[in-house]
Image (cartoon, rainbow, N blue to C red):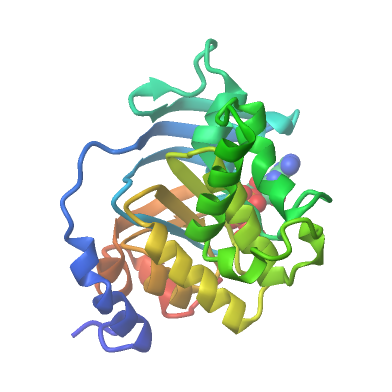
Length: 276
Ligand SMILES: Nc1ncnc2c1ncn2[C@@H]1O[C@H](COP(=O)(O)OP(=O)(O)OP(=O)(O)O)[C@@H](O)[C@H]1O
């Protein structure tokens, strides 16, 4: 038995085994030979990975290994950093997202993002959700919009808590509610993939548990990629795990394998707490 096989982490990962064996279609996103540079400094080196709608994919690895950088490359958030440069190919449904004809606003609706710190707009709860569908022309009438708002808040598990206070400011909600509002905001524009960059790091354990439950409910409907510093969280919520180290994707596979039977020594060292 390997050193990691009977740890609590391994037990958690084993629990998700059943969901790991779901059959997949084509990958929703496909990254090949992806390098990311900030000026002359290389932060990501030759990453290949497939992201599936059927699975939650977790990115783990020590601080500074490039998880957020690679995550941001998946919806061209890196475009907002002047020194950042991406090479290689990243496809969404077979289309190169870095192709010159790609509409980046549309891309970021299709591949939404939820950040570490909840960042609702300083607007009402209703308007936080309605804004995206309005600018993307996804609702023709007020009743369409009401429907999208309710559906998105329901899907994010927030409707019951906010249905009587939709005109209150989004910023007046608790941190955990704000994060679910941000997830509802991403859902409202009908995304195909949702990228989450340490979505629970500013939340208490109860709010964290709610977000983790929500991620599990959303799995299968949207491709979900989550960056997390918590290996327990990766083991609880994901079916695929990618371990990054010094800009390299060291190992990518079934979450239970990564936590029970990693192939690479660097992965083994990280999950057993030898560094990171
Ligand atoms: N805007 C930036 N400009 C220059 N270098 C950057 C920038 N953002 C990140 N880096 C560098 O790129 C490397 C990868 O950083 P990144 O934030 O992607 O790592 P990470 O694994 O997400 O780290 P953490 O777990 O601490 O959030 C680091 O060396 C970091 O200093």
